[in-house]
Length: 483
Image (cartoon, rainbow, N blue to C red; front, side, top):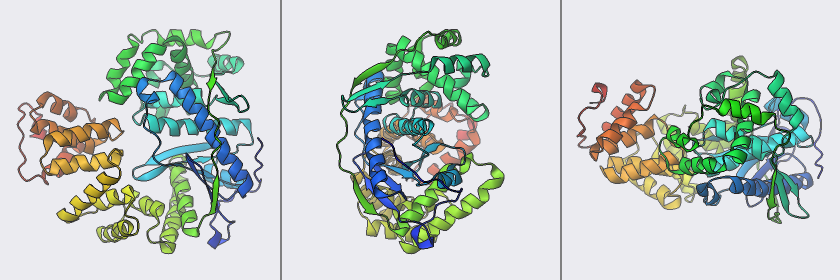
């Protein structure tokens, strides 16, 4: 299926009230496509996304662990932003073919590049794979999410026969990279810090090759590992599924020079879902444009970031001027962390009044600085009633249980939040306090030792302790700075 997009100079897209073309939203069961394309190609793109999502879901389920195969259904459509011209895409992405991102309380979203070209379609499928993996395995480590995305982006469809094929690798390209590319050890792949300092393309290539090898030569060990990602608190401990990894580098080099790479195929259910197209108002358009800049700003050279941030803030302000309770713009504003207490209070109060059924609004309301206790309890209860299994809600309710000195409940909810991807120092501190109060001293001390920056954890602990009526520390042997 060919989808023709316009060419043009590199110009950042704008909303209709600032001279831009009309924007539309195309809704399907798994996607909410926001675009300035014409309706017909936009609807074709939406159907294409549904087909690839179905095929990659089948591919993941056929190679992944039991917990992934039994994953909970998607709770909300994925926001996909597609721009009508090459010029607009270059102004947003520059050299990026696409990007998937997820911020706290901001719905996950992806922006896509030129899907008329084979490379553009591969990038789209790569980012779709990241979105699928984020939904199914929110704590997935970098090496595995990149490697699985490389593997899943090979998905090809025979829609007439409803057959999905994946696992194809170019033998010549693989051999060329092995011959002329820099060597990257599997130890480097498994180290999250190395991903920031090495060639991303080579890291992804090597991770994709490793996942391909594990799927075909160590399927049981990989299934064990994926299952444990769902349940184990310690991600490094889950690696024991693979036994010794000392020979991985040698095995992977041998695998790279295979005369052929195994492919897989299975039936999938082609989507026949209706694509519902509606106009987007200017407030929603400004919010989407702000999100675009925030999604890519970290990939831009620091000297060029200020204008992007300024433009994003302009679009947030404009969206809220047009619609003071626009949910996406409001969450982007709050995520920036530069909102004073009075504005936070007014904004979240208006949000929950206008949309009582939005769990994100209630979580944001509960995070309002200096919110009276009764309102905090009400906001927490409402968020829990709306979305008890959402990670951000679990974080909120875990801390609420801690505040009420319900230590067992706080520990249970904190662990569920941790397994859902809430793994910062605040979450460690919640689990430390709850475990210590229950007398689970070894467990508490493990949470205390985990962060590299002990000082930061201590500050978080002090913040939590200050809100407890009768804090006590029953565990002897805690580090002196945690007493």
